[in-house]
Length: 336
Ligand code: KG4
Ligand code: ZN
Image 1 (cartoon, helix red, strand yellow):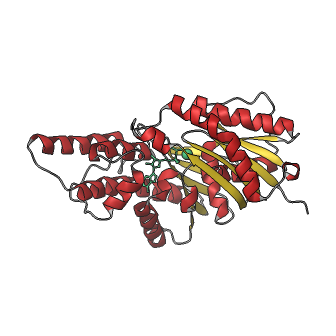
Image 2: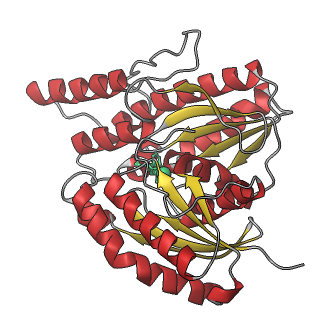
Image 3: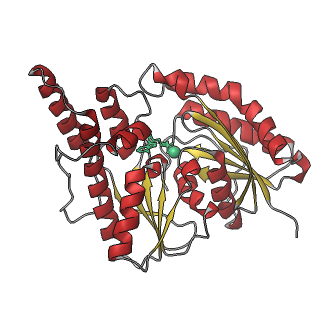
């Protein structure tokens, strides 16, 4: 049988990435050019800077991805691309490149939702079993997505203000940790204790929504107040307290969501899914309260933005006959 080979593109934020995926689950290459160092000194992603980097990197990434996979253009089956959500100027670079590549090589073009990409990163661990629940935690999103069938997404809970990753990055500034701060705060948290007991917003409310801006304010106020009275607080304890509050709420809401619906599998995905505390706590709590539920964590290396996950989601979309033509446009606010 002829192999299905998808060339996948991702450029929604600050990573330019191109991958070659075989039969939706084998990574032949996954080239990622990160721009983090260019954005660090601004404390966050600068859209214009991001677009410019994508333009510089995209053709290099295409060449490298094909070379590393040892695949010739003629062997490819299709092209998949993230067309939203994300920064419009960043998305446009990937969309334009994918359209031109597909047109020039007479290949079908598959439009992929970036968030579906994050979820389907789990396919590199094992097949997804439906009905499934996805806990999607990233820099721009925090949501619980119920998937009764393949390629069907229902948001049953989401953040009402900041995304979890956004909260990490914002309190990182206060701690003097540069963007993106999540990984460093996670490491710091493991050296401290939850001595501050920050609020756990909405934890007892009868809904599946989240809120992290109150926690962020409580954190900032605590640090500023200590500054004013000339007191220095333990950074590891601050990080541990912040992280424990985030984890407690996320885990509680996720367990409730999985108990409410006939879910066979829980998928943890998105940039914040790399969080060690969150992975460990979910492992432990699920084993205790819902041991029959299969728990799949996106591979650590595929939690952050990458094109391999777009190739996996593209493969699924292709099986559902979802294709785009040359009119495909970037959709910065794309929803499921
Ligand atoms: O999914 P992603 O790469 O980009 C978006 O689509 O948003 O997520 C990036 C976010 C950043 O906010 C970063 O601080 C956070 O993921 N992050 C983490 C960890 N690693 C990355 N947050 C908590 N703990 C981590 N270990
Ligand atoms: Zn992402």
